[in-house]
Amino acid sequence: MSKIKGIYAASLTILNDDLSLNVAKTVNHCEKLIEDGCHGIVIFGSTGQSQLLPISEKINLINKLSTHKYRDKFIIGTGLNSLVETINFLKVSCSLKFQKFLIMPPAYYKYGHQDVINFYSKIIEVVPNCEIVLYNYEKLSGYKFSIDTVEILVKKFPKQIIAIKDSSGNIFESLKISNFSILPGSETQLIKGLELGCSGIITATCNVTANLARKVYDDFIDRKKQSFNQKLCEVRNLFEKYNLISSLHSYYMKEDEIYKNVLPPLHLLTKDETDELNLGLKNINFEKKVMV
Image (tube, rainbow, N blue to C red; front, side):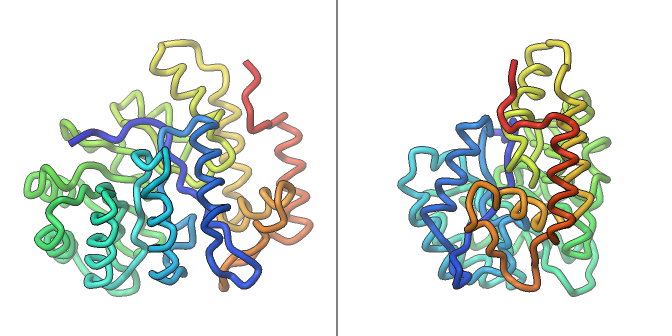
């Protein structure tokens, strides 16, 4: 079992005008993020509209990724409420030699910590060769992991529960487990997390900050003076003034009109909001490529 370390983007999913998944452009988007500095990619996270996509289209994409030169750099999100559908999706993904999965507890229903332990236990009983990144995001699922629950899951399944993405922000400062990856969900927590022993980040805004975030990460690892972290945090703060999916797609539209396509009920920023975002980025002299 290998730890997950570094800068991971929760990738956008690119859609056609008829709102079907554009496999080629989504793969190309992920490839560019890796070449811009990401150590890896989470495909079908919440940023990738995973909860809104048909399973059949997800399978079409992972079939394509299974033969990609960067296939080992992908973590597959599930974005499914159904336990049975989650298990079936993992079975298909594992048959294509994917092992690492980002899995959030189901949304909508109210439940407790023991119920969450039972949920992951059922998955692992059927798909024991999977490696799971717990997804802690109360805003989306309605459930927030406790440190005790994470510790119980890791103790029970040390080979399968390998990491946590902490978008709720209540875990990364206090959880300490050896050979376990803790990854905050925001660039603003990257340096603090690394100082506390975290492994990196998984974030939506790495779709635009890949090169910048990688520079900040590398400088920390190499014990160099931080010259880019302030700008990295400023970029994150600008994007999260809005819905992140809306702001990221609106930002990318200037490169390719196809990014205008998002699945309802999601929507793009208004023209005024897009102009405000782009002006904010201009005012801090942001470029996707870091000039060193």
